[in-house]
Length: 120
Image (cartoon, rainbow, N blue to C red; front, top):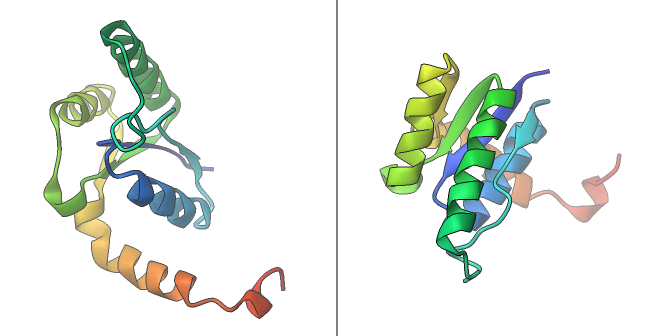
């Protein structure tokens, strides 16, 4: 199975959750962030941020590729660092912005599912 680590700004929590579903339902093992500090207003100390960055790079090491959640093309400093690290580690790098049409088609059909369609 393909293993994918999600990278991107934690302010895009809902996008992370939806992309995780999309990639998982394609048969991938998806590794995501540990917490969504920005959007959940979690008080993260500088030493915790440093630890989280190290952990995320370890998650990149476990993956075959990374998927960058670059909503509206946004890539911050931490995400840029993760992209450079993944490239240095010879990992494939995919971007939401390059696959947004496919994602949107899937998402539109996903949210329109009827409860009666579930678990068939």
